[in-house]
Image (cartoon, rainbow, N blue to C red):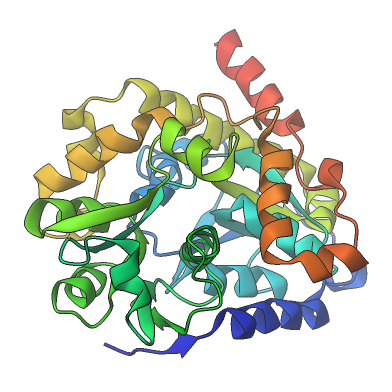
Length: 350
């Protein structure tokens, strides 16, 4: 397993570096023949439940029904997927809404097109042997596993450390990737705590004695962590993409809202047929149990909760106060429900 680490400050510098990669100029995007033009979607750790709506839309043929030719490029982490979008190697990114907001701080004109979840769907675990936060504080450095620096898992872990009064404590963030490698990192003590998504979390809970430090896999747990409804995964794209490829944008929203509707009533049998075997990590039961745990957080219609953007902004303010002191975030430019609402209207007409 390739392991790298970064301090919280290095992480913020990494994000600041995206300023130089702000949206491609309009001249770089030729007029396209919609909707036949290939649509490239960047995603990080595609096999996690975090990206289940995207998987459902693809596996159930909803993209094809909309006449879309979709290429889903899987990256090691959400941060890598965001970089693919920033550098023009992807048209759309499937990732955390906070990436949209943090991107705006660095000159990115990104917008959430469809919200996939009303909670981040990730959790921070540690070994049950570390029974108190004081036990964690005695570890120098405290090694915290995340999918990658700059990812949503890194973000949640950093917020918890701040809340626990450990933000000034020597911490080493360790990139553990996704899948079985992340499970083994905590089980074998390569990290003291792990922030990740399911099914990794449920596998650990079922096979290892762990203590949950923060859990946003439920609406209640997420609200306790963030003080409101924290938007989770979404599909987001640069504004120039939306302007130049409006029919593709709407077709994409149609497929995703249809997938979200399907997941509201899907049975475990339906899901077992849908999910490719490698994504189950060798334990179908754990995967299905994990799905039931996060099901309530899935957006029913792809629209943004009324308090979602403000909740996300408060979280960003806690992590990047200096950036926000210099740049005002325009919440109305971070998302639009237009496409999801039109998709819902189309579905209801059928």
